[in-house]
Length: 111
Image (cartoon, rainbow, N blue to C red):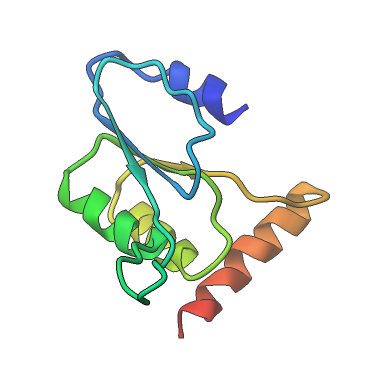
């Protein structure tokens, strides 16, 4: 469903997609795909979804897509929505009410 919503975006819009693993096949002319990275064996090199969401907002997107909001990045996603950036994310839930509960509780993980 998220892919269908993205595909309905006007072709001239710039969409930034942020994901842990590339799962969304976004077929638009101006798409920037950012990919999170796990910490290396030496303990460095980690790039979190939260950091990528903040970097994506600096790119001044017409739309922001977060592959799956599971943690503290949900706070940054909600802050982006409050500033007027159209955004979308996937949330695993059993119902719409459950999805809203999860999305409202996840910013608490941001500390």
